Length: 266
Image (cartoon, rainbow, N blue to C red; front, side, top):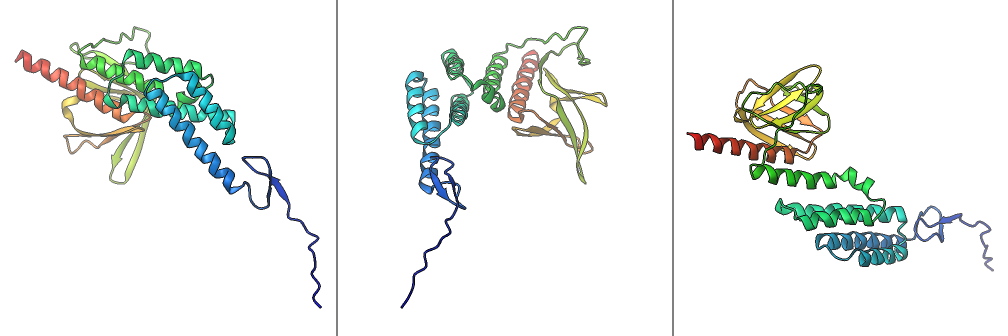
């Protein structure tokens, strides 16, 4: 005769990460709850991108996002992050054509005001900075070049040539490296600026300028720029903590304007 022994031990449980109901150790969540949560995240992101890219009704979006968030176990903080992410992705779509209309820009600002709490999040994405950069590039392309007047009290000691204008100073301090045979060699941290003829770098340790026509090529990324000059003896220079794509586009536009002016004179 076989005797069945009933276990007197019960596995411990803990609340599911998503629904809050009990789940047996060692699991953190119910598999189905995780699927529902991830599907909800994607839906909120998709709804936001579609709304901003097409400048649709914000009230309608807010209602849909709330509905999805409730059934998908999305917290209020996560909801804001998803909406901010969707806004940033939509702005990238709008800016693909390298232009933005006044209506689109006003809508973006209204969207930020409507969804209270996303402004701080999109600052990390540089969403509005990307909009400003595209507007600035278009302004320069039209030949609308204004000179930045630093004034006598400015900490930037750019000694410009008489024929050039200071048109852009990168807002953040950049890190400067040289590419050596042994690898990257850190040199200093400083400020980077663009004029109508040069790239200027200034720091406490060193300062120099690079003529546009001395540049062989530029390798950009969203974290920096690598500059190669025609001179083989001049090691490639890398500047980090700036948008390398914007940097490259600005140099190309300004140098082409300057070259066209010289050809017109000749």
